[in-house]
Length: 425
View 1 (cartoon, rainbow, N blue to C red):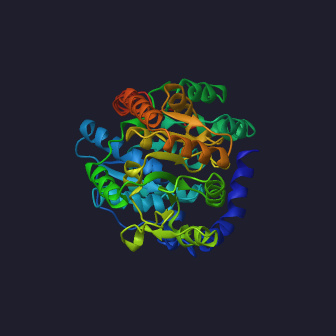
View 2 (view 1 turned 30 degrees about the horizontal axis):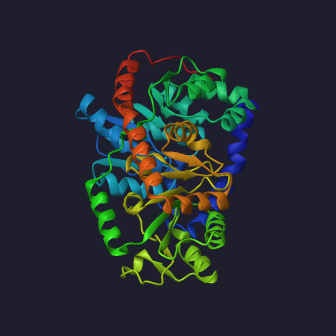
View 3 (view 1 turned 120 degrees about the vertical axis):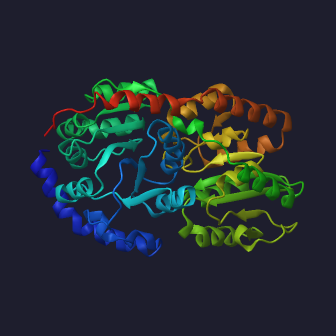
């Protein structure tokens, strides 16, 4: 694919992108808020020296919080511009930062929109978290003399194959980066194979996320309300997983005092998941009802925002959502950091290195499918010594991998002087 074809593809897809936003807004109205920003039209902002950080959704936004703090030490007086692609990511940014940062939608990868973005905000440099490579955006950054770093970068084998299918686009995007700081050596090797110039390994900054005391206290309060129940939390579930979990839970015949807590990743699915549990005959309650847990309740739906860490803190065992079907898993590091044994399913490509390392450390185990995962969870509920040993191993694993955020911030500082390079077109 040539650059003109890429441009043409975006021009043809742009109207469909708006239709897709409109369709998604039926469940999440935030998709249509400030629609002009998707095309580079932004409200007036005060003049300031800015650092731009792009965090596509919730997990990256939480990781951005610790990076913001680390960069603030090295670049005092700079204002942070935080961009997102999803309403949940933007809402998390509001929750974490309030008015401490400026926030905007990242524009579509159309030349006029990306050029407007840089002309409007004029960041001193940019940091893109994980794997968001937009060729035109990066070209516009280079043209505007804005070094952009791909930080906390990960690249699964699947993604590497996809990028390799479009070598010209990939070379174009990678050539306009100021540098790549990879999570692991495997990630760095995959970037190198695609032609990236000398990626470095700084580690995964998600290990440096501190669990807020408020979340630990809230989890303790949850636990007190649950009494002596044994608690399995299935966190950040995706569409299709909840039905599998509920069916597997019923088939495995859990102990009478076991409570299954399902926390859907997307709030627009809370009602749907509650209906799934009720339709299967489970006595079901919802967190939002804020009621005492009834003795007969077997399933609790975690239909609240911003409380995932509290749910994990209240758990005896955590099953990782997004790993039971082919979604690549959600972040198991948070549960490990709370000292909880973790069960992951077969799909973990978003956290492949962390999953493998947690399993090797004895803090997590892998199941072949949802049925096996729920069976493993119940086995752990029935085996307190093994459960506690896994929890201790999970905590030790999480603590032993801290320190990446300082390495990353230092690397960014060092790379700034060397990052200005000719535009690759």
